[in-house]
Amino acid sequence: MLRRLTAKNVVNFRSGINITFQPGANFLIGRCATGKSAALELIRRCHHDNINVSTISTISDITEKAYAFCLYDSIDGFENLNIKTLLTGIYVDPSQEDSDEEKKQIYKIAIVEYQIPNCLFVYGKLIEESGTADGATYFKFRLSETQTKDLKPPEINDAKFCRLIDLVKQTNDGETCLNSCDGRVADINIDGILAILLKQFAATMPHRGISPVMWTGQLANMISDKETLCLEAMSRADILRTLLNDSDNVDQSKADDIYRCLSPENFKFEKEGDKIFVIDPSDTKVPLIRAPTGVYESKQLSLLLAHKKIRTLCLEEPSRGMHQDMIKKFGQLILPRLTDKTVVIVSHEKALVSPYSLERTYIFKNSWSDYLVCHEVMKFPICCIKVGLDEEMKTVLFSDSVLLVEGDTDRIILQALFHQIVSEQKPKILQKVLTEKSSKLNLTTDVIEKTFARTDIVTLGGDKAGLDRQKFCKLITIPCVLLLDRIAVTEKREFPCRMKSLYVTEESFGRSVKIETENEWNSQYENISKYLGKKDIFVWKEGDIEDVFLSQIPSEDEIYSKMELSQIVREGGDKETVKKNRKSWKSKLISHSLGDVNQLVISGLGENNKETSLSFLIEFLLRKFCR
Image (cartoon, rainbow, N blue to C red):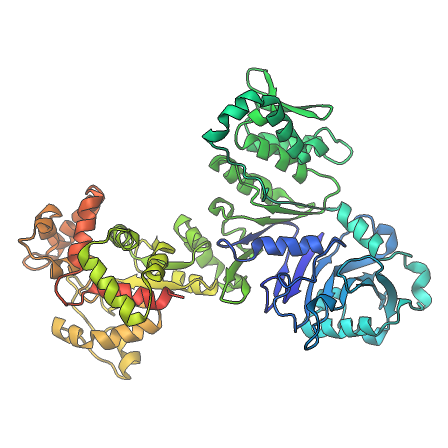
């Protein structure tokens, strides 16, 4: 079974990746174009000779070494060969200055650690300058005890790996003499090793060239040429054609159990020669193309998971085409019970992510010139992960950037702000604010719109979880801003919000500073906000988002009465009454039309040249998230 993928300077993994796999399900997640599919392709290339390692698109920097290797243990077919662990992959010499990139030396290598103490062999071939395996030079030799020290496959790191490759490159062409343990070591070359591995490996990927989507322009041809369409659907269903009714390779009972768990039991599949049919609930035999969405996908997935010989299975978007209830059952009932194979899953489905799968989850990110793989989330206290990984926080795992807000009021209002920023027809006051920010920060309108379009707003349900969840985001390298009410940064909570020495002030100013009046807060706000800004925290100057509107919207304004802002005025009411009125106003916010909420947000931007908290927030987010 696959245990590790190690690669460096291939595809866009310039700085390298090192992923450890456990028996059962392992998850590669992240947003689009971050290298998840590329990781699966590297695993596939470690099993094959038909590798394309001589193209610029495969190697990030042709002047640096490049390699990709997979580590295996518990390998069926090698039981009588005394093999303990196996490392297979490719190594590419760096190009010399002024040399042709196509003429680098490319090695296909298998490093075998036998059960015999200090018995480590290297099998491989030097691929010719053409980049193919034709006419390749084979080699096999045993490393001495001194050479194998710290070089056993599970312990190879970059420096030790390069030492090993140097030993390989110093080997004469052809097989070298082996010593006394030769009689207990199989006479096998790298092609034989790869052939055994390949029988135990399978990977699925979406069709790239032909779209699964049809349109009305095809209907006329579909009606007149049904037979061709049915045959085409069956010809592309290679997994079903190969594995359906194949009891020698598939545990059909297990496959049926998985299928029944995922999909309605009243759809059955039959194979007649090369043709496959679906039996619908009315016992009518219909062509495969008539299989309902998700049923076909569930059937082929069940056959792969029940395969007796496959020990490493890579699945790209296995839930594609499935309904949400199928995906949940797949994640909660099927995957946790897999123990007989290593399953590597690339997915964008939040339903497959849970606190119990995080230790098997790798999060892919990208920078300007590199793909990054993060597993740092496992350093976070597991109690916080269990509490914090709710549906809202699962969104973070697939996000470009995140704005954490305390409650639904902030989320509803800021979603309205974001919507108007990315819309084509912007209100004049908002257009003016964005023009000023683009000029100040040297950003184009396109960059600003894309920044807000890709930023997810996640609700905390209060301020107490804010710092922990922000830490969660930073551990998985997701840009994150925490938006807090002013009361959240006060040492003593009172209502209305009377400041009592903010907890940040001592660190900000080097001394304890009490802020007891509104004027004192306003005079110190810039310094406090700069300090908090370094921690990616933004605090409303006015108190909370409701106070922002009260400070900007005159009571005679139409939106003031329409949105009933008089309910949230603090002055003139006792603490309990104000608290009750504000809670009531928040609960009714969702009943207002989107147009009213949009108008409220625009009014909160103020008029003339006066900067407001909303415009400050826009600038703050642009500084943190633009790239």
